[in-house]
Length: 86
Image (cartoon, rainbow, N blue to C red; front, side, top):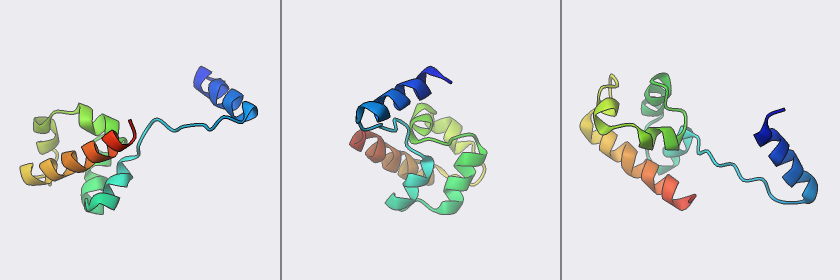
C-alpha cells in the first residue's frame, strides 16, 4: 500500500474527509470546452487540469486540432478550475 493510500485510509478511519487533490481534465466540459478537444488533450497525455496548466502554450498549440484560440479558451477554463480548488 502506498503512503498516499495509507494516509487516506487513516483519514477515513478517523472521520476526516479525504480530499482529492487532482482535477480531471473532463471538468473542462462544464466550462464549455468541447468533448473532442478534451479527448485530444487526453491523447496528448494531459489527464489533469494541473498537468494542463504546467504545459507551455506552444506545446498545447502543437496538439493536432487545437488552434491558439482554442488553447487560450482551454487555459482560461483550466485556471478557473484550478483557482477554485486551491
